[in-house]
Image 1 (tube, rainbow, N blue to C red):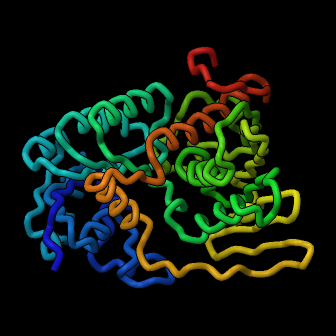
Image 2 (image 1 turned 120 degrees about the vertical axis):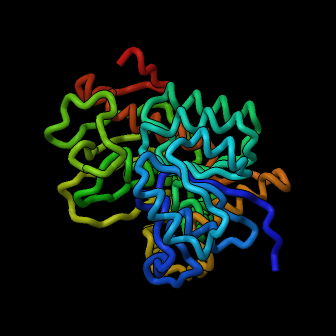
Length: 351
């Protein structure tokens, strides 16, 4: 049996934060593929959840009762600063609304924690993101942001295929993302992050057009993704420093399909959550994918532990998460400026 090494806490007990003890696991998989932060900590024998916090007392009470068998030591709080002071966790999950991340992360970074797993997007303004990054880096906190596809093996395989020249030189990435929840901050952040991961470069400039009805959308006006009507969909263009150009088609009115089309000088790759197809002069073939044996969240937490113990790098660090946020805000700025080109670095104060 693995000895418990790491005391953990969760701030935010709705949705992916809490889950429930009986959840079946990710779609198509068993309980070894937990979806929530709580279930992931229960799955990892090297961790023990000792504290949870939410602004709503009923959610705290419900969690402590429901999870008592898995986490007999867990204490509930409505004040996260009190929880951090009393529980002294090694690893903290921040699972609050997008616009609440910054103050929590900045405070927590100075309390002696070793690792942090924060939901995405990193924040809703670059000023908040930069405060977070400063606090994390100054205190040496190993931190992952939950851009989930970075832990899915076949997306990593596609990145390696591109690096190996399977389609020649990568030139274009086209993202298809539709349905009523094709909104920029809560869900689009996943897609933009994966575009950045596959492109492997910094961004020079962007331009965009938001969905109808959001022509004057600036700054962030959402509620953490609960109401998709408070966030826009978008059609956007990203020009990377290495010459890759990406088209982000993420509008609510489109058919609900999601996938990335990578086009190179000698072929193309289609990748979505179901798998990978490679097209070259020889035709199109499905590429066998490595089976998934552990969930995204569990992988992210184990990566944090490896970073704490061995100094190993994480795959979704704060500065990568900031890159995605800057693109989202660049899209909004482009709309506000008449769908014009926005050069990076983005100056929020000038928008």
